[in-house]
Image (cartoon, rainbow, N blue to C red; front, side, top):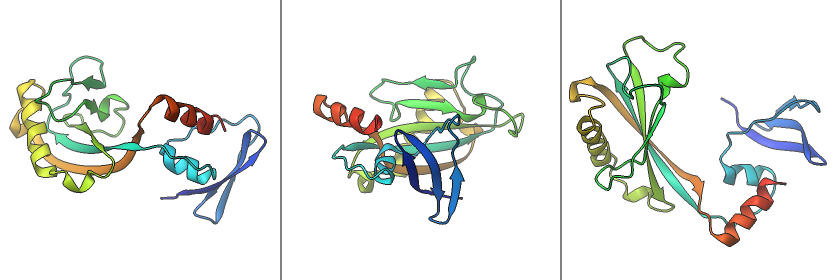
Length: 174
């Protein structure tokens, strides 16, 4: 497991990616760098200050004892129901089924929260409500849920206002 600690930038291009302060990866002119680094960490690595505020995400992983939970080809389902604690549900096996047991899958329920509210989250209650919602929508039965795990990521979604969007675009285009 390695962390990006720095980029060497020449003009508008990344020429080196530094890992763990000790290892370097050369980036050639024709290479394409795709980053999944959260935006606030990326701006820190690039040395760009920002005053953006963020929403976090509580990810509830559910190991499911069935080959498929979300019907059809969709990998995501979105929920706008007030009684459903999550706003997005994804089935990881649908992105790539290589290495997955044939008769098992994993669902991830995503619950957004405000920056600073991480300590107020009742993970057990939200997990129970998530399972109840999945049952209510006919996606799983209680006995299908083999295991759960929750991970809270405090800074995932930049909050956009007109002024913050200008700042976001200026950082993004650097």
